[in-house]
Structure formats: C-alpha cells, structure tokens
Image (tube, rainbow, N blue to C red; front, side):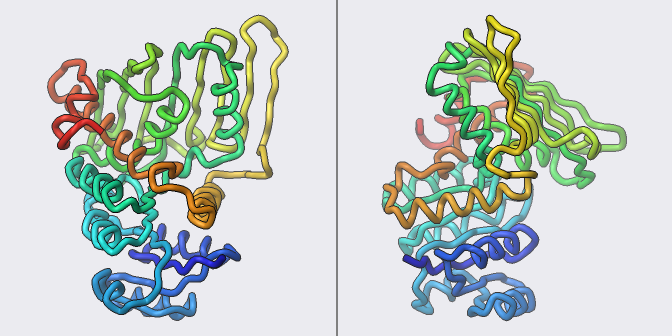
Length: 340
C-alpha cells in the first residue's frame, strides 16, 4: 500500500518532511502547498508533484490525500497550525502536525476535539521519543526494571538567539521536553516555575520547572535558549526503586544503573541511530506505518492529544511564574474547554 501524501508549509522543516516521504517506499508525494507561490512551485518541481497555494484549493482540487504534514510556523512556531489542520481534519484527511500543536491552548483543544469527533488519526512531530534508545528505556519502565517511579530529571537546551515573544523558548522548544517526560513518567499534576533572561535577552530564555506527577513521582526540567553547541542537546534521567537510566541526546547513549549493584548496562547509538536529525525519519515513518496498518484514531503514537497534554504543562508553568504559585495542570485543562 502506498500513501498519497502532501506537505503544507515548505520551509526548512517542511523540506525535511518531504525528503523523508521521498525516501519512504510506502509514500508518494502528490502535492506541495505553500502560500508563497515561488516556494510551492520550486518544491513541487523538485519532488515531481502538483503545487497549491492554499489548503482549500488543494482539497477542492479533489486530489487523493492519505496523509498531510502541516509544517507551517508563525508566532512561537505555532500560530499558523490551526487553520490548515482544521481544514484537513474536516475533510477527513489524517494529519501529522509540527510542534507546538499551537501556541494557543484553545486552538490546540479544538484540533484534538475535531480529530476525535471525526475519528481521524492526528499526530504531532514529537520526534525526541521516536528513537530505539527511548523505546528500550520505555520497555524498562513498563517491565518494572526501574521499579516504582521516584523522579525524573530532564534537561533540554540549544543556542537560539531569536528574540520573539516572552514565551517563545517555553512554547517552541519544550513541547519536546514535556512529551519525553510524560512518555516515561505519565501525567503531570502540579508545576512550579522559575525563569530568567540571559544576558541581552528580552525573552525568558532560561527556566527551571518543578514537577509533581499524578502517580506521586517528582522531577524537574532545566531548559535554555542560551546553551552552547558543546553542551549537548538533552539529557533524561529516570530514577525508580530498583534502578535508574540515563538517556543522552535522544538516541546517542543509554545506560541502566541498578540500585543494588555497580554493574551497568550501556548502549551507544542503539539501532544504528547516530544523531538527532535521524529522529525525523523514525517519527514520520512510524506514523506512515501506523496508517498503513489501520491504527485506530485514538491509538496514534505521539498524537495530537499527547501534544496538547505537553502544551498544557507549558501553560501551567507560565501561569506559575506569572503568579508566583504552584499551579494544578488540571486548571489549565478546564480553562481550555474541558478536561481532556
């Protein structure tokens, strides 16, 4: 089975999606859509497909579409996701969106609800957990090798000098962080956040966020847009009653440390995955495979629902910092239109 796919928004990330689809033997790129005509035309020529300049035009053309990547951007990298996603979901077309699901929590809620109502698979590119190393670590958690979860320490930082909205760092980067956190430890109950501006910055470019989970575990996130390339991208440490693991840079190194022994188990480049850029392929290919296998809309890995949950933690952290209080994540869920 070959899926007919399209990419909406053909900037840097959209081009990555297109290249992955081009390399996948189970997908055929049939359309490129961008509001900038020259970009759409150039990409369509490159990938040998039809160019469109609006999602409505593409849908009304009647072209068969089994999957569309929405790689638009906008304020905080998320303000332009809503309209094309809603148009595609209303047309019954599965969507793989970019993160954040939206920089507006209400819009995120509406996209997830529409996908649910129409029973359409809706996923988001939460690619940091789509690695062989993360999957093995998840198996350790599920199989009880870590024991009862006690805590998680998560760090994610890059050097991003862009000055945007005050919350650009939080809303644009940390959907990934909180998705990884939820992937291993479940839903977050309460958050307390501290932030600071790096030298010469106008945005809150550094943060420390304390976490309490529904299952009783605790943890924290360290995040920054003021980090050097030598710092690495991320580190995730999960600690339980029987042991802990440390996952470095999404896919590069995974180590298990038993509580009662000094003997460790370590993997480097598990599954042959060498670096973070490869996660785009593993994530996109995963959704393609799920669609081919006919996965039900409510069993999608890295779903819009997951992305919304991550975004709600971010909004709770922002509220915590603004008010100087510990914030219940469920309060953000209620504000967004109903408990998810």
